[in-house]
Structure formats: structure tokens, C-alpha cells
Length: 375
Ligand code: NDP
Image (cartoon, rainbow, N blue to C red; front, side, top):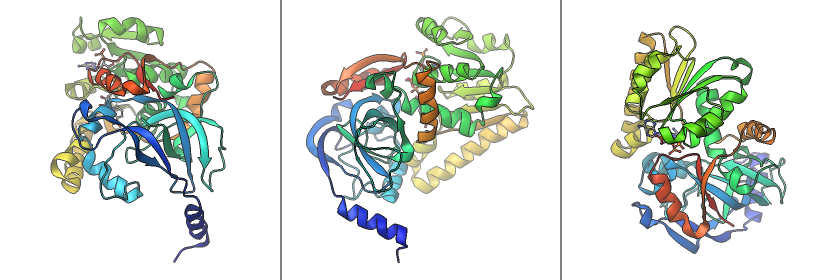
């Protein structure tokens, strides 16, 4: 039995069946970058819910998660989410298009979309269960997007939404950092020169924090130019000895993982509301290796162990994952328009050369973002 709202939604979906067949970079099986192929007509994009929009993609970025997803990373849990959300109806996730963020123009709006209209220039980052943005069109929910900043190009804009939403999830949602209480707080960013690092330095500086970052020698100028107060060159100095020379931190943002998560904990202020938030968690891999329920259970145990390690020394260790967040992008838009945050694009690849962009991201040690010019 449908209530009146659900009935209206149902009627709206039945009426609007504008399915767009489009070209998109896709895979038909998991494997290496060579599995990516440009499908000229096999991929379809259509609004399936009245809170969604169809967007013509002008540019999209490539993130480490995209490279891992074509190798099958996260497939078990993401497939559960795909089935739950109805984004897979054929019984298989293939052809699978990756890409999580975009900048583009609205070409169609669902019946419940009030904030946007056809022709609006928007940017956004969508959930991993949805068909991706390395495509001519993408469908997004209105809660996943925001108006694009007016002062930057689509290429520049596409470099920001995924890293912005991830940083917001880590520092603000999980780390409980708020703009109004950030001034003067000390933040350590492990991995300052990549996508997350270059964005989070700028966000933290705009909010008046003192920012220390780890960096390779060749990226020192970049992270300094973005506002980092202290840069520790982990290639030429012993990082853990070097950190002993500095005051302890109120927040640590870990984008490296492994021994970095464990060893950096000692540099967090004890017995204060200080948080180490790591973005490198075994959640998706555990589900891939052991199945959904045992994988979630194993991940919960590991999270418990991390929490316990922190608590015994009066510190807090938390895990964060990317979450689509249109309202955070609204705030970031203002910060871009007032030039508190600038896009950091390392290299742009044309749509025909997406595989080369993936290769670049897979080699790591990025200096900002790799962007695809989709138009
Ligand atoms: P990038 O590839 O853009 O940047 C990675 C950074 O890590 C580089 O700047 C590199 O700097 C640094 N780095 C690599 N190895 C080391 C090392 N051994 N010691 C110190 N620094 C190192 O990735 P992103 O910034 O986009 O993402 C970073 C990580 O965050 C991802 O790999 C992923 O694991 C995680 N992530 C998790 C998400 C989640 O939902 N949980 C979402 C997004 C990202 P240098 O060249 O100076 O070594």
C-alpha cells in the first residue's frame, strides 16, 4: 500500500522514462587498467527517483578508489548497496562505470527537485553504489550536489568534490571539528601533497588552524604555498623522531595508513577531545575477503581494537569513509569563490585518454588531482 507521496513519486517515475544511451568508460570484468573500454552506446543513464537529476558531465576526476574498483576492490559491500538502492537491475554490476565526482550542467530534473533547474552548472560526488562519472552523463541525487563555484572552470571544479566530501566526513563529521572552534587547533596531515592533503591543508588554514604535514622533498613548495605551517620531509628526515620536536596535535588526519596510524597516535594530545581520524580502513577489503557479514564483523573488531588502543592512553582513534554531502559542497563553494580554497590540478587528460589518467593515479605520489576533460 502506497501513501499519497509514494504514489505521486511512482506516477512521476512511470511518466519520465528518458533513458539516455551514452558513451562511458566501463569494465565488463574486474582486472587491470587495460580492462577499461570506451563504450559508445552500452551504458545508460536515467533518473529513477524524483529527487534525482540528469547531469551532462563536463569534467571528472580520477581518485585512487576508481583504480582500485576496477580491480574489484569493495565489490562485495558495494554490490549489496547497489542492490539495496536499485541501481543494479540486471543482476550484475557490469558494465561498470567508475568515477565519483564531476562538474557539469543539469539537463533534466526529477519531480521533487526544487533547488536546481535545467541549465544550472553543478558539481558533486556520488555514492560508490551508483553508475560513475567517467561518462558523458551522470545521475545524482540533489543531496549529493551543489552549485558549481562561478569563478573556476569545470576542469578545476571537478578536482574538488570527492576530496572535499571525504575531508568533511573525516574532520567534521567523524572528527567533530567545527569552523567556529577550529581556530588555533593543531592539525597533523599524514600525506599532505595528494588530493585529500592539498584540500585539507586549505580547509584547515581557512579555519585558522595550525597545520603540519608530511611530504616528499619535491612537494614541499606545493604544500607550503597552500599554507602548511610546518612541513616534515619524510624522505630526508626520520619522521617519528622529527615529530617528537613538535607540540602534540589536536587532530591527526591519516591518509597513509599502515604503521602511520599506529605510530602517529603518540603525537595526539592525551586526555583532551583530540582525534586521530584515519581514511585507510580494512572495511571494504574485509568484506571482499570474507563476505559481507564476517567482513563487517572483522572490521568492527579492528575498529574496536583501534578505539581501545586510543582509549588506554586517553586518545581517540576513529575511522572515516567518504560520504556524499551536498551541504558541505555549498560551504566549500563559498570558500572557493572567496579564494580561501583553490583547485590543485596536476594534469588533465582528454576523454579519449582516460586509461593514461588511471595509470598516472595508480603510480601514486600525486601532487593534487588528475582530471578528465569529458567534453
Ligand atoms: P593521492 O594518491 O592523491 O595522495 C596520496 C598521498 O599519500 C601522496 O600525496 C603521497 O605523498 C602520500 N604518501 C604515499 N605513500 C606515503 C608514505 N609511505 N609516507 C608518507 N606519505 C605517503 O590519494 P588521496 O589523497 O586522494 O587519498 C589518500 C588515501 O586516502 C587513499 O589512498 C585512500 O586509501 C584514502 N581514502 C579513503 C577514503 C575513504 O572513504 N575512507 C576516501 C578517499 C581516500 P608523497 O608523494 O609525498 O609520498
